[in-house]
Image 1 (cartoon, rainbow, N blue to C red):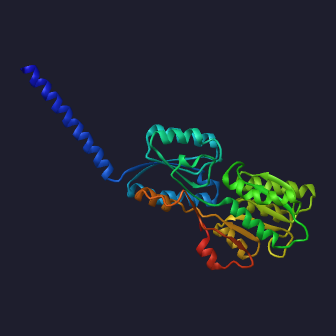
Image 2: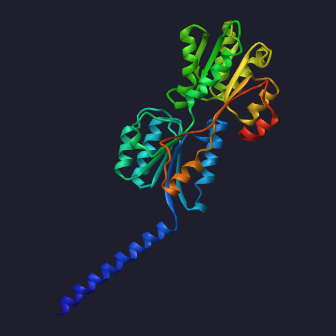
Image 3: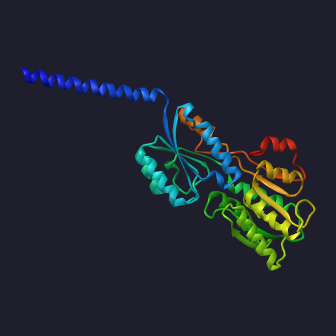
Length: 321
């Protein structure tokens, strides 16, 4: 009889412990704490990326009930390892802006098996749509098409282009390169040089300096972000080569940092393509409501011409200070 009482007491204790644990779990859930792993390029990459990182931090804050882990890298293999670690840690969501478009199948399949929901932001990747909830991204191909259409509309007698690319294999590089590659292939524009500077201002300057030193003729610089365009212009300035509206060299950038748009307003640059860094609020709404209206949400973006840009445009669309 004493043994039976002991067993019953043990069972009741275990049941009490289970209820206690369940209540703790319910309490954590009712408190709204959601575990999120964010994988992104580092904020030092560009003004665009700094704005993008800040947007994520503002929306997914501890004050709003999120427990956020972040990992920043320009290397795809390092991002893949970080994603695997987030899966091991048991986050609820992974938010991903991939350094490269390929190599994500296995990791995202593991996330799906673990019940972790994945949202892509800023950039697409080459995986089956069933491996992510939704993608809130820019249409990088359209950015390239818009920029090249603007360039063709300038009706230059000849197009001798220095093409400075971003990180190879990234969605931004692929999209912004594609339209220009078509013109090179068609022979409507000449490729003076096509080289990656991996989003880096100093590397872009070196590329342009090399072309200047070679003596090869050029009249267009197509840089795939504002920072690289800035580096390219520094090389032109040191060589005494004029640039901007009505000058020797057309300068084109992307991302619409305020400082870059001011260069357009002063007509030192000619064109800047918009790339919106604000995806966090759209993703949060999907997480909070469970409603995913579309598998792919495209940010509305445009290109800006130095001859038409206004201060109001800079105030509305410019990033940073």
